[in-house]
Length: 282
Image (cartoon, rainbow, N blue to C red; front, side, top):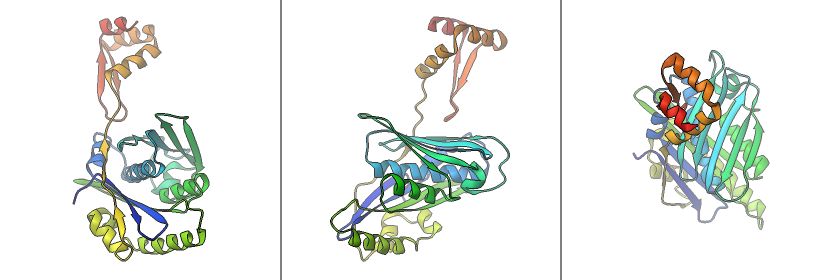
């Protein structure tokens, strides 16, 4: 079974489209070195899959950030990505994690979706986290912002030796000529999609899964798109951050520690600068 792929598909006679995401390596690399509690890992996996599905559905070129923030034990959790399905993510904890699900982890809060296209204006959508299910929160976003019927099915597996995250999205097409047919098509496919199990979503290969769900509806599956973990940090960006701090605070840090070290919160890479390097920045 080949993982870390996004599959898009449409139906020959039905006014709906779908996406299937199955991720393993990207999820594993994103969590490497981070000692998150299991419920946080699960939510990060769901958010990773959801961001991949969102990026493909919105069809834009540029960057995307999907962030959950609130007053719960998880202060915020975010996935950053782009239209090429390069993804990275992080969570920041604000207390002891004792529960599972959006409400117990995030508390009272919001989902913020930020799109920064290569061309055009930056867009930001905000949706209250009124459900304990991330899938339902994403569905609410589409209903409010796109007025399109949307369903998501998400699954994660965080066994120590093998991390997996998968998701299925079904969405009605934005047609205007026959809304009754569109609604009936969506209802039909939704009923079929709801028969999927977590085990099938995580472990069946894409074509077997789609054939099992929609064998009578002739889904046309397009060439899959690869998904990868990619951190955008660099020594150059770190130097810019140091300049924003100012020379005197950096020199004080050097007197105490002998050097300045900046760590990337996403990939945990350390960037170290000595006094000569710091002075040269100014």
